[in-house]
Length: 319
Image 1 (tube, rainbow, N blue to C red):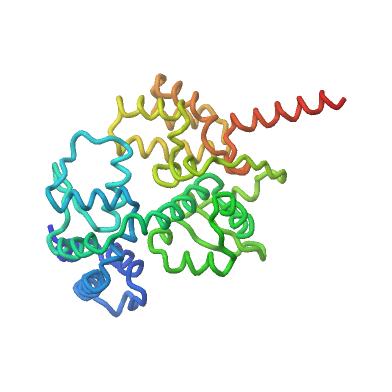
Image 2 (cartoon, helix red, strand yellow; image 1 turned 180 degrees about the vertical axis):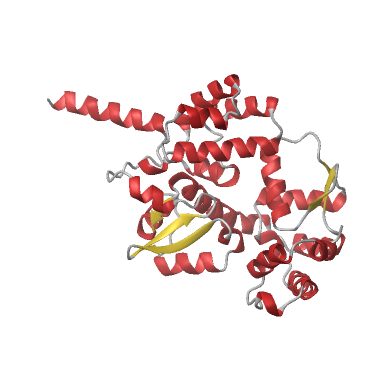
């Protein structure tokens, strides 16, 4: 299937959502047809092919490079590859049929042009910056802009408020994941993946427990949703890959993130996430404490225990 055929066959609302996201000055929904949207999108990607590489991570660009040589079988890949492929698919840079992923034929030349002018070393800094942005919001769900800027500094990413807003405004990749909102006269940066910032702010503890992850850990969370440098999380992912298809792993994990993030602490909800499978429930229950808890400033429950123990030790030491 070509991109043109895809635009022709799918709901206009869905096509318009993509069109209005990728085109800088989109026309109103009622004033444009599917065919006109397609022509604007394909013209933009031909005129500015660098947009193609800007939409994805370094890993996703490498997948596109490989797909220029041959299609990719849908068999034999795991959760991490699944995430990269789904991101490319959601950006309409690749498509799938029953047994393979491929680049739509009318995008092959724009993708080739994008790869030809792509400089991985130069792009790496942007890739790291974008991944840190995404990783921080997956950790915290919502932060005051000033707090977000402070956390960026911990990773040597220096921006003021205006610079941050400009960076987000022109960054199509982050526009789908992150947004700046005004809430109770304050400006916050929030996650659009789990848009429950009002609920988080309503129950977030006032004590600011700064337990920052390393740069590598935040990048891992930004790219793959998980801190793959945590041995228990890595082992849990291996367990899931032995029993579930990648798309179902993603569904389970997304529910786990909300459960841990809001510190729901309800066995019935956790059993539902586990689809009433006791073995899966036991594994999930054993890993929840290592996932970010948004209401406690992104600390996992395991980290909160450690912080609490350290406080108790200090009290004893000075009592």
